[in-house]
Image (cartoon, rainbow, N blue to C red; front, side, top):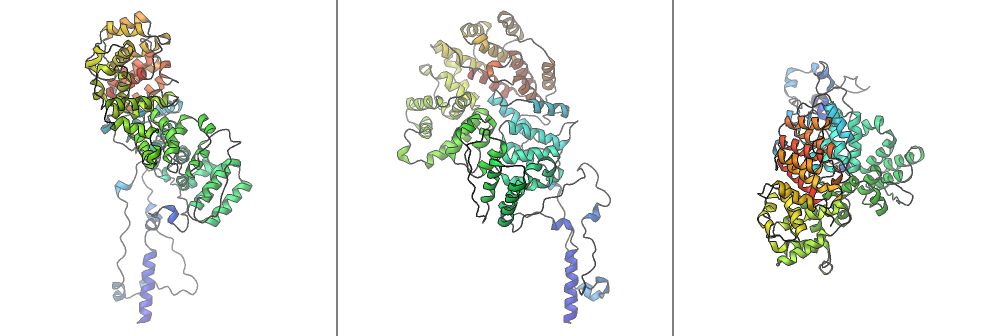
Length: 606
């Protein structure tokens, strides 16, 4: 009887070996650092998801039959009696992956386009190769915060890939543009929507950049199987970092030393990788990072330094592109105070919302000793919202509006105070602050609160304030304000900007939004030489995209046409065509906010 029982147990063990390999290949649900050993890199799937599986695929999940080891006492199930077979445990059911868990690379995105006002098919049937080329040629940052926000949403939208482009490369192009816009988290969401086994070389390159922008070196580990072809220079360092993060201290130390002796990456780039290795469990390593001879802040240097809680010198950050500052604003290993200067830039770009910046100030407020609060911006923000007297709230808002040196930081101050501005009752008595209050409301998308200022426009005696407030309301809201040709001419006559740039933006905005009729726009264009009637291939593409209600194509083309270092440099004809096409594509609310922003960001010189 004991011999028979042993025979049954050995046979049952064979039954366990016969479980399909798919079940054994399931990834652990624990984070990598909880594993005793690092999992082997996932093998790339050479077969496209769009192709029918080969007839031999059903055999792939079965282990090959091997001869038993010498001296083993394996008993084949065929030699068992029917009674013995009946006592065996039932075989486990085959592992099935539900359809919902199979990710289709042809339809990747993080938001529902219809819920965000982009329609069901943001890109329609536009040529994907053409759109990809536009994305690569787009300069960043964009000259409009609201255009940035609208384009980001379009890039994040979950919709079918357009024709004439590889679907995975289409995701890569979108993620790469988001990274250049400073949208590290948005890009990471797109990258995470594609299985690594479906990655193309372009997708791998973008995924590496996304991991660095997110200050997440652990995200490089699943990519190592694909990195040999596209990022071979840093593969050895990546292996070392992943070993350290997985708790393999000895292996990590050996690999990082080998990379130091043999690898092509040296200097601070190697030191930062060593710093990441030292952050792993039980490595016992400490690397000293010296920035003295470093002249530029690359994605590698930013990502690894931020991942280990290091802040590069101010000189390097000052020379870094705005996108790097936006990446730093959300780096999780940095404190709120360390992230705040970059968070203001990120808010001006459109990466951060006004609420996100407010939350950061609140975090700093909670961490500050009460005796040290009096002169801080966090305290001023609290006063702007909660002071009992309106005069106190306005005084705090004026101080915060004045914070920051660059245009992006000033725009961040306006957005930060959007909700506070909505608590101020419109009155001619505060005419000097009216333009800033309205600009803050529109920077936060609070159009209805801004429109409440329309009835008091006629009572504002300060000419400069009245002109600015009227222009913001005429463009940014649907409020009933004077839109006659004579009223527009009054603004143009009072405009002291170089080459009447503000007047050109105003008329282009009013005409593009349909706030003035074509006859009035034509007359003003002719009288003042505003150049609204110019046409080009771009204007034709813009019109066609809007007519076909391709919201994504429309926003991308608008960004191409409006790319400039400042709003004053945007050709008025391009603004006119972009706003007109956006209206046709169902994007009128976004178009209004973009038009108003052009006036808010071009401060009149008097």
